[in-house]
Image 1: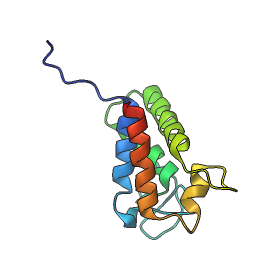
Image 2: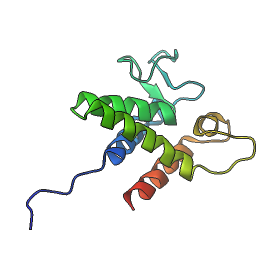
Image 3: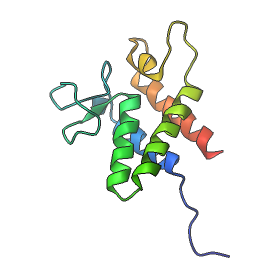
Image 4: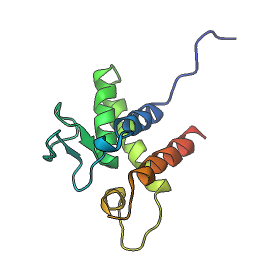
Length: 126
């Protein structure tokens, strides 16, 4: 029996980090991957980014995981796997072709996006 706790998969780290970034509705945005505190669009990896869409949050989370020591290639793969997990559980809505368009549609709520992350996490933990 090992004293080492089980290793958390990289994709779980990225999804959990992304969900945490947008857990507060003030940190969620629409219409761009990320925005600064003034609401201006910016890159999700930029230090001034404080608001994120669902996909932008995965980019920012992977970047933070990399800064915390995750190998850059593993961080990139985890980001892609996180995005694929979000796509896999996203609701089928006629006319929408991406997680970003689901995030940006007026009928989608912050709670809907958090639920999307919860379903994606459930899927990757199986």
